[in-house]
Image (cartoon, rainbow, N blue to C red; front, side, top):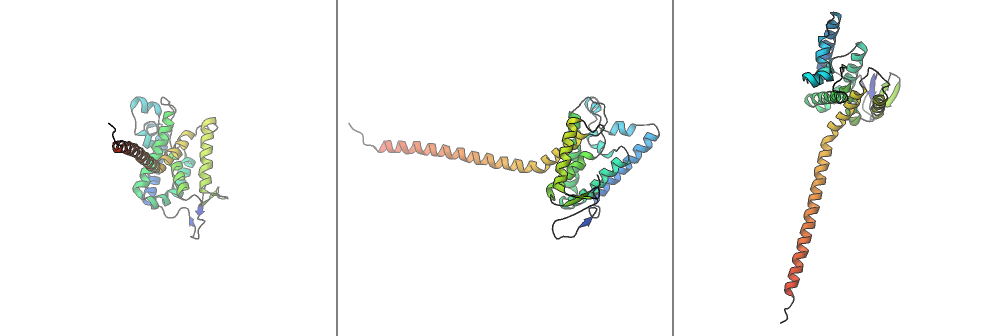
Length: 249
Protein backbone atom coordinates (compact mmCIF):
# COMPACT_ATOMS: atom_id res chain seq x y z
CA UNK A 1 0.00 0.00 0.00
CA UNK A 2 1.08 3.57 -0.58
CA UNK A 3 0.41 6.37 1.87
CA UNK A 4 1.90 9.59 0.52
CA UNK A 5 1.16 11.99 3.34
CA UNK A 6 -0.79 12.61 6.50
CA UNK A 7 -2.07 15.61 8.33
CA UNK A 8 -3.25 16.22 11.85
CA UNK A 9 -6.78 17.12 12.85
CA UNK A 10 -5.30 19.98 14.86
CA UNK A 11 -4.38 23.37 13.48
CA UNK A 12 -0.77 22.40 12.97
CA UNK A 13 0.44 22.42 9.36
CA UNK A 14 0.56 19.16 7.46
CA UNK A 15 3.89 17.50 6.72
CA UNK A 16 4.71 15.68 3.52
CA UNK A 17 6.09 12.17 3.53
CA UNK A 18 6.79 12.09 7.27
CA UNK A 19 9.19 15.02 7.33
CA UNK A 20 13.02 14.90 7.17
CA UNK A 21 14.49 11.44 7.70
CA UNK A 22 15.91 10.78 11.15
CA UNK A 23 19.28 9.15 11.76
CA UNK A 24 18.13 5.63 12.68
CA UNK A 25 15.50 5.48 9.94
CA UNK A 26 18.10 6.46 7.33
CA UNK A 27 20.50 3.85 8.69
CA UNK A 28 17.89 1.07 8.58
CA UNK A 29 16.90 1.96 5.03
CA UNK A 30 20.54 2.12 3.91
CA UNK A 31 21.46 -1.23 5.47
CA UNK A 32 18.35 -2.88 4.01
CA UNK A 33 19.15 -1.49 0.55
CA UNK A 34 22.77 -2.70 0.72
CA UNK A 35 21.70 -6.17 1.83
CA UNK A 36 19.10 -6.32 -0.95
CA UNK A 37 21.79 -5.49 -3.53
CA UNK A 38 23.95 -8.27 -2.08
CA UNK A 39 21.00 -10.63 -2.45
CA UNK A 40 20.62 -9.68 -6.10
CA UNK A 41 24.31 -10.17 -6.80
CA UNK A 42 24.48 -13.51 -4.98
CA UNK A 43 21.40 -14.81 -6.76
CA UNK A 44 22.76 -13.68 -10.11
CA UNK A 45 25.93 -15.64 -9.35
CA UNK A 46 23.88 -18.69 -8.49
CA UNK A 47 24.87 -18.50 -4.82
CA UNK A 48 22.13 -18.24 -2.20
CA UNK A 49 24.40 -17.78 0.79
CA UNK A 50 22.69 -14.58 1.97
CA UNK A 51 19.20 -16.06 1.93
CA UNK A 52 20.19 -19.40 3.45
CA UNK A 53 22.26 -18.01 6.31
CA UNK A 54 20.45 -14.79 7.12
CA UNK A 55 16.85 -15.52 6.18
CA UNK A 56 14.72 -17.06 8.92
CA UNK A 57 14.61 -20.83 8.39
CA UNK A 58 12.98 -22.54 11.41
CA UNK A 59 14.70 -25.88 10.78
CA UNK A 60 18.14 -24.28 10.88
CA UNK A 61 17.28 -22.36 14.05
CA UNK A 62 16.05 -25.56 15.70
CA UNK A 63 18.82 -27.91 14.59
CA UNK A 64 21.77 -25.63 13.85
CA UNK A 65 21.03 -22.94 16.46
CA UNK A 66 21.21 -20.04 14.00
CA UNK A 67 19.43 -17.69 16.37
CA UNK A 68 20.82 -14.58 14.65
CA UNK A 69 18.27 -15.24 11.91
CA UNK A 70 15.56 -13.75 14.16
CA UNK A 71 17.23 -10.37 13.60
CA UNK A 72 18.97 -10.73 10.26
CA UNK A 73 15.89 -11.84 8.30
CA UNK A 74 14.43 -8.32 8.68
CA UNK A 75 17.06 -6.87 6.33
CA UNK A 76 16.40 -9.29 3.47
CA UNK A 77 13.71 -8.71 0.84
CA UNK A 78 12.31 -10.49 -2.17
CA UNK A 79 12.08 -8.01 -5.02
CA UNK A 80 11.93 -4.26 -5.51
CA UNK A 81 8.25 -3.84 -4.61
CA UNK A 82 8.76 -5.74 -1.34
CA UNK A 83 11.63 -3.59 -0.12
CA UNK A 84 10.10 -0.37 -1.49
CA UNK A 85 6.82 -0.77 0.40
CA UNK A 86 8.55 -1.71 3.65
CA UNK A 87 11.13 1.07 3.49
CA UNK A 88 8.57 3.64 2.33
CA UNK A 89 6.33 2.77 5.29
CA UNK A 90 9.34 2.87 7.62
CA UNK A 91 10.12 6.35 6.31
CA UNK A 92 6.50 7.48 6.54
CA UNK A 93 5.90 6.46 10.15
CA UNK A 94 9.32 5.83 11.67
CA UNK A 95 10.58 9.42 11.57
CA UNK A 96 7.94 10.78 13.95
CA UNK A 97 8.34 7.84 16.31
CA UNK A 98 12.11 8.31 16.50
CA UNK A 99 11.68 12.04 17.13
CA UNK A 100 9.30 11.34 20.01
CA UNK A 101 11.05 8.31 21.51
CA UNK A 102 14.66 8.98 20.70
CA UNK A 103 16.96 6.74 18.65
CA UNK A 104 17.64 4.12 21.32
CA UNK A 105 14.02 3.39 22.20
CA UNK A 106 12.99 3.47 18.55
CA UNK A 107 15.71 1.01 17.50
CA UNK A 108 14.92 -1.25 20.45
CA UNK A 109 11.25 -1.29 19.52
CA UNK A 110 12.05 -1.99 15.86
CA UNK A 111 14.18 -5.02 16.69
CA UNK A 112 11.86 -6.32 19.42
CA UNK A 113 8.82 -6.28 17.14
CA UNK A 114 10.78 -7.66 14.20
CA UNK A 115 12.36 -10.47 16.22
CA UNK A 116 9.06 -11.12 17.98
CA UNK A 117 7.29 -11.42 14.64
CA UNK A 118 9.97 -13.88 13.53
CA UNK A 119 9.54 -15.87 16.73
CA UNK A 120 5.79 -16.11 16.13
CA UNK A 121 6.45 -17.38 12.62
CA UNK A 122 9.03 -19.85 13.95
CA UNK A 123 6.70 -21.27 16.59
CA UNK A 124 4.10 -22.18 13.96
CA UNK A 125 6.56 -24.61 12.38
CA UNK A 126 9.82 -25.22 14.22
CA UNK A 127 10.98 -27.75 11.62
CA UNK A 128 9.85 -25.84 8.56
CA UNK A 129 12.31 -25.28 5.71
CA UNK A 130 10.44 -22.22 4.46
CA UNK A 131 12.56 -19.05 4.34
CA UNK A 132 10.96 -15.96 5.87
CA UNK A 133 12.46 -12.60 4.88
CA UNK A 134 11.44 -8.97 5.15
CA UNK A 135 10.93 -6.18 7.67
CA UNK A 136 7.13 -6.42 7.56
CA UNK A 137 6.81 -7.67 11.14
CA UNK A 138 8.70 -4.65 12.46
CA UNK A 139 6.80 -2.37 10.06
CA UNK A 140 3.48 -3.62 11.41
CA UNK A 141 4.81 -2.91 14.89
CA UNK A 142 5.64 0.66 13.85
CA UNK A 143 2.16 1.12 12.41
CA UNK A 144 0.64 -0.04 15.69
CA UNK A 145 2.80 2.37 17.70
CA UNK A 146 1.92 5.22 15.38
CA UNK A 147 -1.77 4.36 15.63
CA UNK A 148 -1.60 4.46 19.43
CA UNK A 149 0.38 7.69 19.46
CA UNK A 150 -1.49 9.53 16.69
CA UNK A 151 -4.81 7.69 16.31
CA UNK A 152 -6.69 10.47 14.53
CA UNK A 153 -4.11 11.51 11.97
CA UNK A 154 -5.12 10.90 8.39
CA UNK A 155 -3.21 9.01 5.74
CA UNK A 156 -4.14 8.77 2.08
CA UNK A 157 -4.38 5.11 1.13
CA UNK A 158 -3.26 4.51 -2.46
CA UNK A 159 -2.86 8.29 -2.74
CA UNK A 160 -6.65 8.63 -2.88
CA UNK A 161 -8.60 7.49 0.17
CA UNK A 162 -8.28 9.36 3.50
CA UNK A 163 -8.41 7.13 6.55
CA UNK A 164 -7.51 7.63 10.21
CA UNK A 165 -4.41 5.78 11.30
CA UNK A 166 -6.25 3.90 14.07
CA UNK A 167 -8.66 2.40 11.52
CA UNK A 168 -5.84 1.59 9.12
CA UNK A 169 -4.03 -0.36 11.85
CA UNK A 170 -7.27 -2.10 12.87
CA UNK A 171 -8.10 -3.22 9.32
CA UNK A 172 -4.54 -4.36 8.68
CA UNK A 173 -4.62 -6.40 11.88
CA UNK A 174 -7.94 -8.00 10.95
CA UNK A 175 -6.67 -8.73 7.44
CA UNK A 176 -3.48 -10.32 8.78
CA UNK A 177 -5.50 -12.42 11.23
CA UNK A 178 -7.97 -13.65 8.62
CA UNK A 179 -5.21 -14.33 6.11
CA UNK A 180 -3.26 -16.34 8.68
CA UNK A 181 -6.34 -18.51 9.29
CA UNK A 182 -7.53 -18.97 5.72
CA UNK A 183 -4.15 -18.95 4.01
CA UNK A 184 -5.63 -16.66 1.38
CA UNK A 185 -2.28 -14.98 0.69
CA UNK A 186 0.23 -17.74 -0.10
CA UNK A 187 3.85 -16.66 0.08
CA UNK A 188 3.06 -13.93 2.61
CA UNK A 189 4.10 -14.37 6.26
CA UNK A 190 0.79 -13.31 7.77
CA UNK A 191 1.69 -14.84 11.13
CA UNK A 192 4.74 -12.58 11.25
CA UNK A 193 2.59 -9.55 10.43
CA UNK A 194 0.15 -10.42 13.20
CA UNK A 195 3.06 -11.20 15.52
CA UNK A 196 4.54 -7.74 14.93
CA UNK A 197 1.27 -6.15 15.99
CA UNK A 198 0.87 -8.32 19.09
CA UNK A 199 4.47 -8.01 20.25
CA UNK A 200 4.35 -4.26 19.69
CA UNK A 201 1.19 -3.96 21.75
CA UNK A 202 2.67 -5.98 24.61
CA UNK A 203 5.88 -3.93 24.46
CA UNK A 204 4.00 -0.63 24.63
CA UNK A 205 1.30 -1.62 27.08
CA UNK A 206 3.15 -4.20 29.18
CA UNK A 207 4.53 -1.60 31.58
CA UNK A 208 1.01 -0.30 32.24
CA UNK A 209 -0.21 -3.83 32.90
CA UNK A 210 2.64 -4.44 35.36
CA UNK A 211 1.91 -1.19 37.17
CA UNK A 212 -1.80 -2.00 37.34
CA UNK A 213 -0.98 -5.46 38.72
CA UNK A 214 1.34 -3.95 41.32
CA UNK A 215 -1.33 -1.45 42.37
CA UNK A 216 -3.96 -4.19 42.53
CA UNK A 217 -1.61 -6.45 44.51
CA UNK A 218 -0.83 -3.59 46.94
CA UNK A 219 -4.53 -2.80 47.39
CA UNK A 220 -5.31 -6.45 48.08
CA UNK A 221 -2.44 -6.69 50.55
CA UNK A 222 -3.68 -3.60 52.37
CA UNK A 223 -7.21 -5.00 52.46
CA UNK A 224 -5.91 -8.29 53.91
CA UNK A 225 -3.89 -6.44 56.55
CA UNK A 226 -6.92 -4.31 57.39
CA UNK A 227 -9.10 -7.38 57.84
CA UNK A 228 -6.44 -9.04 60.00
CA UNK A 229 -6.11 -5.92 62.15
CA UNK A 230 -9.88 -5.58 62.52
CA UNK A 231 -10.15 -9.25 63.50
CA UNK A 232 -7.30 -8.92 66.00
CA UNK A 233 -8.69 -5.67 67.40
CA UNK A 234 -12.18 -7.19 67.79
CA UNK A 235 -10.74 -10.18 69.63
CA UNK A 236 -8.66 -7.89 71.85
CA UNK A 237 -11.69 -5.79 72.72
CA UNK A 238 -13.67 -8.91 73.59
CA UNK A 239 -10.94 -10.07 75.99
CA UNK A 240 -10.77 -6.63 77.60
CA UNK A 241 -14.56 -6.57 78.07
CA UNK A 242 -14.46 -10.05 79.59
CA UNK A 243 -11.78 -8.97 82.06
CA UNK A 244 -13.88 -5.98 83.13
CA UNK A 245 -16.79 -8.20 84.18
CA UNK A 246 -16.95 -8.79 87.98
CA UNK A 247 -16.01 -12.22 89.26
CA UNK A 248 -18.66 -13.87 91.46
CA UNK A 249 -17.46 -16.16 94.30
